[in-house]
Amino acid sequence: MENREFFYRRLHSLLGVVPIGIFLIQHLVVNHFAVYGPESFNKAAHFMHDLPFRIVLEIFIIFLPIIFHAVLGVYIVFVAKNNVSRYGFFRNWMFYLQRITGIITLVFIVWHVWETRVQIGMGTEELDYSLMENILANPVMFWFYVLGVVSTTFHFANGLWSFLVSWGITVTPRSQKIATYATLLVFLAVTYIGIRALFAFV
Image 1 (spheres, rainbow, N blue to C red):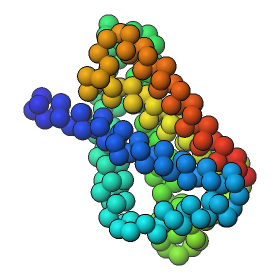
Image 2: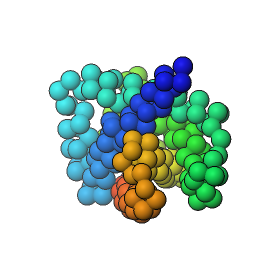
Image 3: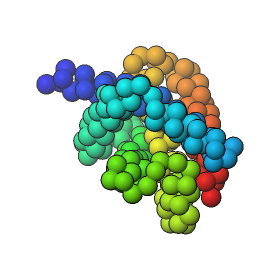
Image 4: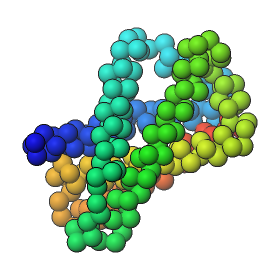
């Protein structure tokens, strides 16, 4: 039972970086094309939409990993306890915020998929610049998206730090300190890309 839980947690950590983390960065970069105008965003979005085997890729590289990561993540939220003796004050706050942002990110992703994929599948709108422009024209939804993007990028960046520790890549205090600064830069970079795209739509 312990070996199975160890395996599931390692898989949970791995999926958070590959492929989910890679998909997150790709998704934010595509959205960032909105900075250059509606035509640039529409071209980038349509290119991704027209990829060969898109549905298969989405199911096995995006949706199934996200579902596994989310379900196990919710379980971890309810059973996890802070470990002051191991990580200290700062890391315990990061540990705590990782769980909080995980829940916020899950709610945000479900809503975002509903607005931009499910409703489109029902034939209400087309996936283009105007769709996001209409969504973000509502101030409440705009700030909800800001919160969602920041929560998601923090969850990814802080999860990347945990991944490096869990997989034995950063084992010394010095390497973990360096990883802290590196993942902070990752957080700032991807957050900037995501937030700038949101402002471009409005």
